[in-house]
Amino acid sequence: MTIKDKTIYMDNSATTPVRKEVVEEMLPYMTENFGNPSSIYEIGKISKHAIDKARAKVANALGAKENEIYFTSGGTESDNWALKGTAFANRNKGKHIITSSIEHHAVLHTCAWLERQGFEVTYLPVDKYGMVSPEEVKKAIRDDTILISIMLANNEIGTIQPVEEIGKIAKENRIYFHTDAVQAIGHVPINVKKMNIDLLSLSGHKFEGPKGCGALYIRKGTKIDTFLHGGAQERKQRAGTENVPSIVGLGKAIELATAEIEESNKTLLELRGHLIKGLLKIPKTHLNGHPTQRLANNVNVTFEYIEGESLLLLLNANGIFASTGSACNSSSLEPSHVLTACGVPHEIVHGSLRLSLGRMNSKKDVDRVLEVLPEIVQKLRNMSPLTTKEYRTI
Ligand SMILES: Cc1ncc(COP(=O)(O)O)c(C=O)c1O
Ligand code: FES
Image (cartoon, rainbow, N blue to C red; front, side):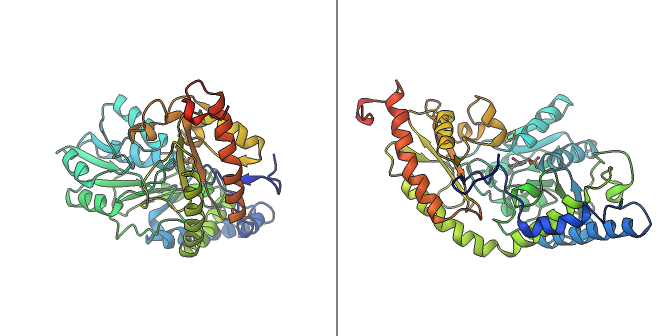
C-alpha cells in the first residue's frame, strides 16, 4: 500500500518513512559501490570507508567514541546482545539483573530467557505515569547485581525515564547500565558519558532511516560476550557481512535527526498539545503516560467503553493510520503490559489509542483527526453494551 495524499500516517513510533536525503546517500551503495567492506580492492575500500563515516556520525550523536559503536540488525538484536552478552560475560560476578516492567519485549522476553538460563531478574514497578523511581532501583540492588537495563523512552506512552540518575546509581555501585534508546533518538538529546550509560540500543527505522539496521554502543572496557559468531566484521564482535547501504542511511539519518532535535521538538510539541487538548474534550477520555516528561511525538489516550481494535479499523477506513499500543502487540489481544503496569484498570485498558507524530504531520492532519475521532468514538460507544446511558446518543 502506498501512502496517498489523503491518508494521514500517525504511527511514527512503529516506523517512519525513509527520508529523501537518506535514500540518496544509500543508493550508490546498492549500485556502483557494491563492494564487500572486507575486500581489499578499491570498491571494497569504498564500502569500508562509508561504514567508518557512518560510525563516526553515530558516535557523534551519542557523545561516544567511534570504536564504541557496533552496527547490528536493529533494536531487537542490540537489546539481545546487550543483555545476553553482559549477563554471560559477568556471571562469575553475579546472576542478578534489574529492569522495569514496561520495557519493550526485546528486553522483557530476553530477560525471561535469561531467567531460564539461571539468571535472576527484578522487574521494577512504575508509577501511574510509567515512571521508574531511581530510589526503587537503588533498593533493588543486591551484591550479585551485574546489570541494570532501563529504557530511555517508552514506545507506547512516551514516558522519558530519569536515565542520568539511574546511570549514576549504577556507576556508584559498579554495575553495568544499559538503556534502550530506540524511541529516544531524534527526540531526547543524549550524551552517554554524561548520562553514565555503558550500553545503548538504537534502531534506524525509528528516525527516518532504513529498517533492519541498528547499533549498539558499548563503552570501552565493558565486559561483554560476542553475540554473532563467524567472520571478523565489527572488530570481531559482530560477525556477518555488513548491511552497507543501510548503515550509510542510518548514519545520515542520525546526523539529521540529532541536528534537528530542537526545531523538531518545538513543532511536535505544538502539534501534540493541540491533539491532546482536542482529544481530552471527548468525555471519559484519559491521557496515558507522563503529562510533561514524554516524547514530543507521543499521544496515548484511553477512551472508556470502547475497544481499540474497532477504533483502528474505523480510523483506517477514514485514511488515518494509528496504533493501539506497540506495533507487535496489535496482532495480539493481550492487554498492553505497559498500560497495565501503569495501573490503567482492566475494564478500560483495551480502549487505548496511540497517535505518534512525525515530520510529515501538519496542523491540518491533527485537525482532521480531531474532526473524525469524536464521531468514531461516539459511534462505537453507541454500539457497546458497556456504555452507560448518559454517554449514548441513540
Ligand atoms: C523501545 C523499543 N525497543 C526495541 C524495539 C525493536 O527495534 P527493531 O524494530 O529495530 O528490532 C522497538 C521497536 O518497536 C522499540 O520501540
Ligand atoms: S513485541 Fe514488538 S512492539 Fe512489543
